[in-house]
Amino acid sequence: MTGRGIEMETLRMTCNCEGSEHTTSRRAAMGGAIGMGLLAGLPLAAMAQSTTQVRKDIPSPDQAIDMLMAGNKRFIDGDMLPHDHITTREKLDAGQQPIAAVIRCADSRSAPEVIFDQGIGDLFVCAVAGNVPTDELIASIEYSVAVLKTPLIVVMGHSKCGAVDESLKNFNDIEALPGRLPSLISQILPAAIQAGGKPGDEALVNAIRYNVQNGMRRMPTVSSIISGAVESGSVKIVGGVYDMPSGRFEMV
Image (tube, rainbow, N blue to C red):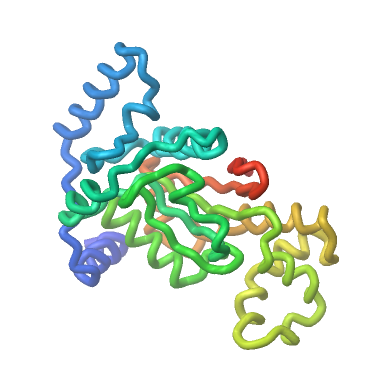
């Protein structure tokens, strides 16, 4: 068994997860369903979304992006789906097949399930202030990719991020921050440096974007599981910033 094969098998055994079957017949069935939907004049995003039925097929990375962006438009327009959480939670007892793994800021105003109008089981969400891919979060993403076959990884920043702002305000002395904050904020410092290392509205906007981009770049460089999935084309990594006033998620 190769090194990467051992890593993936270890993840499966450690988490004791039954996993989901992704057979050729299921892919064929998905293709047939998509074809029928297109013939009926329905967009793929609408076909793939369901308020009452747990997903049985995993979309491609590009389809997953389309589904998230369609959901974000519904959120912006105030036309969100009436999710049937009761039926969904019962069916999800057998397992999960999220369409995206999201590294988000812990900020209470940036919940991706709401912003992308997704239901229970649709997103594998990992949160930490400043949405930096810490070692623990990367391990969680590896599980989502290797075991759950999640096709998309999203690094999600947001406007007026307090953690990024602290990296600018305390640029010259992060050790002055209380508790364990210096350890966390130090991981955002590269973005603060790229943004000029001084506080201000423009610097904050730029640092937030740089921080997302840095997170996107870091994951495949430190994880053979993630890099292998990206190289094979089974996974894409994207990033963006959620603008709180407008509700819009914009790719970077």
